[in-house]
Structures are given as structure tokens and as C-alpha cells.
Image (cartoon, rainbow, N blue to C red; front, side, top):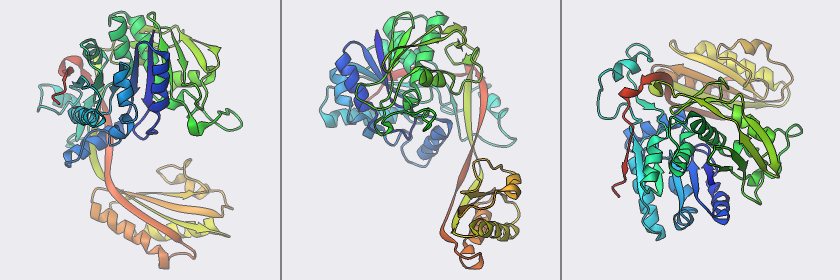
Length: 445
């Protein structure tokens, strides 16, 4: 059996989440791996921008996450696999090596998976055309990254890597790679690859499968969420698995939490497309086999797609946001008046959206059709105005007009806040595999 624990489900996850997971893996003994899933489309775009602007291109909290667990992992042969390399896997590997020296651990063998960055190394025949077809005319990509599969992770682990640092890989590949390496699965064994992909899908979002994102008071109660435990999967050679969590932690693992995570972000349960396999979830069985222990079996797979998905990021104008609060009797009417004063004074070239937070916002729409039907009676309203424009100076003029509400606007406005930033857009493309060159190598540090 191979145990795989998850130490993070996204870039903003709890920094100490891996500590109970590693303790559980150490106490259980036997082969084990710890994964960190850190990347979303926006996360990677920001990492690419940070690297271009002279900053680090890898996860800003990488060392804070690893420092409490790195020594225990290395001394107990718990492998670590993470996409915390983001836009600079080599830089992340160097930082981890430096951390190991600081902690006085043995020297880890660190492998770096690369090839996902489609703009790295200049133009490749056919690739630029493929990416350009997904973008508006005349727009240049700021970043373009393909979702790599598990093969390079598996190869690095088979070669003795203690730590594998990746950039953009498909989320389930973080767990599938260790499974392929440990059990020597063949990638044309579609059902086993599908089972490993399902294991990775259950682990990838961290505490969602242990009750976090699941919780809804009075309907789906979950105990002790402040100390929620992150998931551990026990996977057998045939691909069957048991989902659990560290003993003594909060949260819950039950049939409901597991079923919700199985279907999370799945557009077609009969054909979940990944770089390694097309996963069919329609025959999956879920069974509670003990407290916080759920058995999962029955994944089926078909041959992998002929293309790889790529996410392309590009800059498109500027976003301005401004907020001000109104409270007490007639608060919503005053917020309405404030918005009605500002909008006619906005310069040409801006699109806008207004929200009355406390009365309506989440159910609003970018066309502002909801504003006319906002319910009355709210006594604590925060007016938000979002502006978008191609020219940052024009956006700034719009924000200045909003700021004038302090004295030009209705009574009682307070807590003014404004911000402006470049706006990122994303597009997706399907890239032929022969245009992508995934690889792994040993870190040079």
C-alpha cells in the first residue's frame, strides 16, 4: 500500500496543514508521499508576472510550508511532490535545497519537471499559431502553460528523487506520478491510471474532501473546522483506495464529503479529460468502512486525449475598485443616490459595475440589470463600484470621482477605499502533444 497525504489544496491554504499529515504518515510507516497542489490559472499568471518584474516566480509561502515537515519527510523517506514551482521550478528547487542546509538535514535529491512553459525557449513551429488562435486579434500572450501529465514525476521518483518540483501539471498527476513509480503501472493500463487519477482528484483540493468546502451549518455539520485535518489516501496496487485523515484532527471524511469531491469541477462524469487518461466515474462505488474512512473503487479509463490543454494569460486593460459604506436608516437609498451621482461623471471609455453589498452583490450581473430590483430595507450597505478601461489614467479619473463622495455625496459615507491594478485575462487552447516537450532533470543546487 502507498499512502499519499495532501499538505495544501491551493496557494492560499493553511501553512501548517501538512504537519498532522506527516505525523500520520510517519506513525503509519511504510512507503508514503506528501503532495502540495498550489496552482490555479490566476495563481500561475501572477507568478509569471512576478518573475517578469524581477521577483520570485515560485510560491511565496513555499519555505513556510516545508520548514515544519522537511526534516521528518527526509528522515522517514516520505517523498514530496509539489507544483509550488509555478513559473520558476528551478528557483523553487534551489530554495528548498537552501532550506535543507539551514535545517541540517541530509542533502535531498531534488528533481525539477519543466516543459509546461510554452513561451520558454522562443517560438516553436506551429505553437505560436496554435496559441494565437485562442486570443483576441493583436494580443500577445503574457504566459502560456500546458497541463503536463504524471510521466516525468514518475520517472524522477523511480530515479531516486526525494522531492519533485513542478510547474503546471494536471492536479491529479501529483498523486498519479508517485503511484506509477511505486507500483510500476504502465500508462496504457487505462483502468489503473484512471484509479490513480481519481485518487489525485480526491486529494488535490485539500480539506474540501475532509469537510471544509462541504460544510453548511444546520444542513451539513462538520466538527472542529478550525483544526480540520487534511486528507490521506491509502492506495492499493489494484487502484482501490481508502480516504481518511490524521487522527485527532477536525473535519470529517464520509460518503457525502467524498462524493461531493468526486464530482467537483467535473463537467462530464463519463469523460473527465486529463493528460494521462480519460476518466470514467460512472461506475465508482463509495463505501464508509470505519470512522473517517471511506473506500472508493470502480474507476475506469480510456486512452488519453491527443492534445494537451494550455492556459494562456494576457494583459487586458486596468481594473479599478472603489468602496464606501452607508449605515443606519435609509442606508440603501443613500447608497443608490451615491452610485447615481458618480456614474454620469465617469469618463468615456470605461465600463462599470455597481454592487450594494449587504443588499445585493453575489446575485448581481455585470450588466447592472439587478440594481433596479434591489430589495429595500438594508441598514448596512457598502457601495462597490468596479471600473474597467484600457487606459490606467482614465480609470484613475473614475476612481477620483468616486472619492469625491466624501463631501459631494449623501450623508454618512465612510470607510472609503480605492485600488487599481492591471487586469489579467485567460484563454484555453488545446495543443498537439508533439508541440510540448515535458522533461525532468536534477536540480543543480
